[in-house]
Length: 302
Image (cartoon, rainbow, N blue to C red; front, side, top):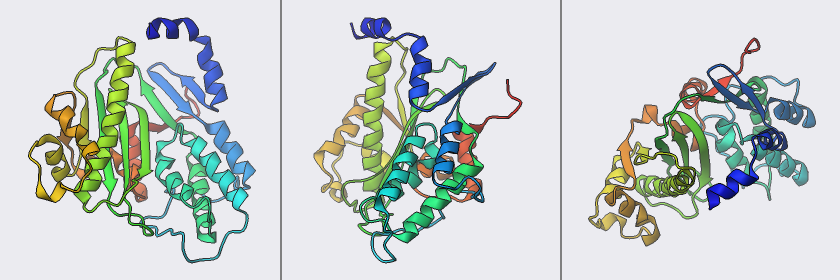
């Protein structure tokens, strides 16, 4: 019933209207589709008077220590909030901006001058990557795979961890997340495990959606680089060092035991979700972007 209703209500012509509403630009090529927001990003630079700025290799400095405390207060709070809101909109097609925007959004109620300076770096990075966007090649692979990662106690104010994931259908990146966890994790294993739980929730939702559209499904895979968290997800034994982890997080273990989800180890150098949990240096960021399908549209592309 849901599928018939969606087929009735949604028309192909609506795709153009939807992309226009979202500020997206869709370019069809012989082998795939590019989705960008170049026009929107140019307008963003103009709005905040950064159209002639120097470019930066990364959205944030590596090992930044942005904090709510210390430093001079930035007096124009509405201007800061307007910028961060605009940047959130830009992450619709730019997952490489997600971590930086997530960090800046934590200071909406108490911006400091150092946060405003950090915002300038994000815009400088955008200036150098205006023509970049997501590339979707024409392939038939429909297997779901998610890369999940967490940066343990990375926040300097409250020592909460940041988790993130990148969700693929085949080689197509379709959803992503970078978010600070709600409670303090007492170990890297706990932080990674909780991040995998959030990835599992995305998998379950996606499986339901694909079932509606009668898409053939295999067992989804969650890839992590922390062996302890992978072992915790797959092992039904209750470990003494994980007694404090809330019961709600252990539904992942149930899904793994029931073979609804698989967990798999991936090396840190191939952990694509790294860019969703921390600021990387230029070469590493570019390498992950290439692996994730974030590509630059060439001017002579037809």
